[in-house]
Length: 112
Length: 117
Image (cartoon, rainbow over all chains, first blue to last red; front, side, top):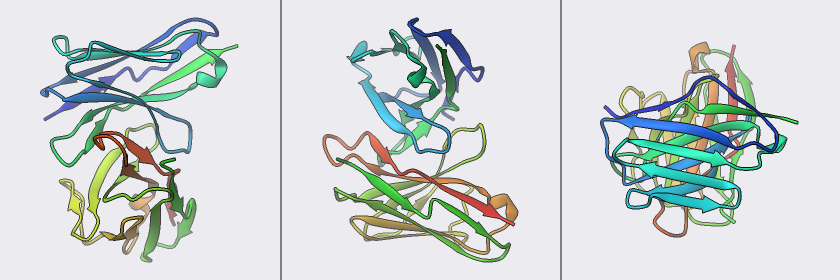
């Protein structure tokens, strides 16, 4: 079955540095991969979508890469700010009906 | 745009009672909505796909008689947890497929915290 792995350990970085989060997957070839942000006690918020034929996508301070050979996506936040502190989830398209399969998320903590 | 609301945001009920959670798309029509459950420090687990005007599609292991889903209109889907038990206590989140583009992205509601005593 499809398996998505995100680092369960929190990532703790200094403000201004670049945060890099990893999403690995197995037993699947997704047509696209998405990243969401989730704050405590809230629903996830969509950030970026990258398709299988795209290597990289950017949005403001965010950058996502997608390596279908390594079966890995990297999510970067440049010039990180304390307000970026949250849990970041990656999600792959499910087998049908626009279903999404989510990873367990990585918590990011940006220190001022 | 693409705002999804949920009601209630928090509910406490006694074991054996039923609880209804509403999910509304406020500024767009959603033919497809999704219901998720999230336990503390765990990922979102898809429970079912709710389709307007037809029966919901449940994920493996989710009891359809316990988690009743109704998608009566293009802006409203409801999840009813029947005969709730303490193990049903969780964070329930709904989402709607994006109204623009290819519907790959989902817009999530704020979630409903259910506590069954």
